[in-house]
Length: 312
Image (tube, rainbow, N blue to C red; front, top):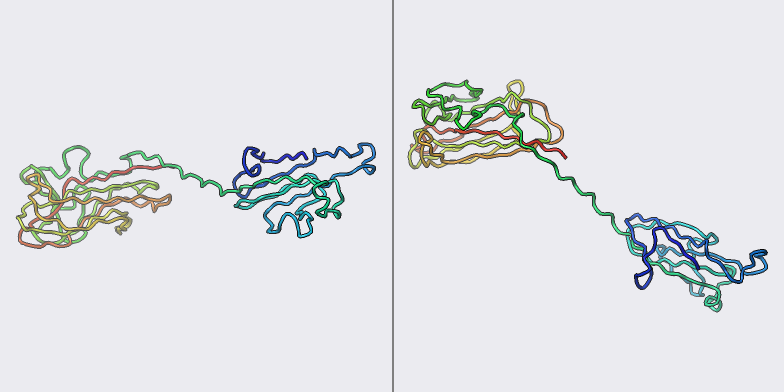
């Protein structure tokens, strides 16, 4: 018997040579180079001729039946192929110089040569997900709070909104920096809730990670003061704001922003998908509650909006 396979079998494995590959695994079996020393090359009918039989091992039937006959899946051809689903199988490949109808057990050992092969059809390896390349960029972010270490709220005066791109949504707010020290955006009343919006004027971008930060605190607060807030990142079009990400919480008084003391921070991130609205990126901030007499003039400073563009 001369058996060739594609893929090539590993003859070093036990108990049988092994063919391995990813499912579905197609194996070609070739016995065409097998020969019989009794065969008459001039007149094949005068000598024994070869029969080829293939039992692929995945049909559920045994290689030999109860009478010793070979249970062939394919016979009478010297070359064939078979596709295996995921699993491990034992194939039997046989060559005989007897007629196929004369395969009783008493002639098997004299007339037949059988080669067994282990077939391992394994699940294909998952396709690795490419690691995206992310690059920090400022090209998608409008001016929220200055472009240098100095905040845009440090203007040396008190200015009602709208100013510097910030507008009132509800209530009323102002930039307060009367002393020219460390300014902040606060409400016009000590305890009155308010909401403000900043339209960056820059369209939201696909496949981009945005990170929004606020320093939170008071301008005239006292120990025991506590205020609640809602920070949102979203888009705006036609004056309508659509939130994409939000951060809500409360901040206890720890000192005043005018003295450089931050009582709390708000941080949120949002990653866009491959398709976006194209509307302008916008930031919305709201004081939602003011508790205690020490909660005077709650607001924020040092707003930053960073963008990181990611590509596969």
